[in-house]
Image 1 (tube, rainbow, N blue to C red):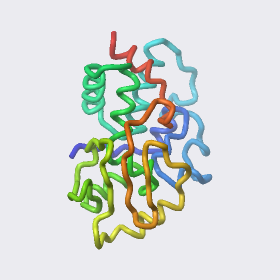
Image 2: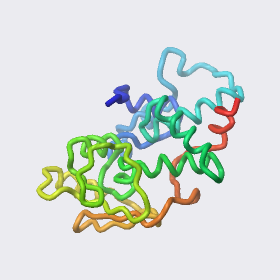
Image 3: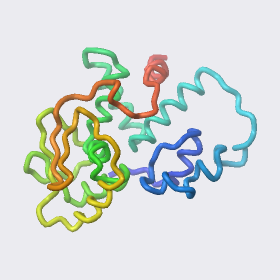
Length: 206
């Protein structure tokens, strides 16, 4: 499985805001954005020329890094979203939100998407009663997500639930039994991603 192993704090600094890629660490003073609010690299503190293309590209990179997908994967999601009825940008965010690794984070069962992916790959979760090990698996309305019986990651999951804020209305979670259900497809106002999806559409439409 292809993965991005680059430094996560540098990714946040490059985009100029917290993407919460490291879970609890992002809430402390150790956060890279808090310590060095300028972009990484030799010219990080220099003046950067703003252009329409640069703004669109940065928005696409921000979305890609926020959800933890590679360039080829992201382009595939965009192509699929453009073929669906409705607004392409909103379709794109809905597809990204419905990734199983992202859903675990939204439910509070993982502190970060990287942690969620690792638990899924190690077989700690089931989808509709069947073991799943594909982080990019798309969840659908009515799907039931549960931790695998006898999972050794149960304590890690319970620790992650303590950091949980509000769970989106399109999901339902029981943190005591570590089970959840997908109620419906997410609406744009329920997507907390710090992304302007229209800029991504404009970039790919060129």
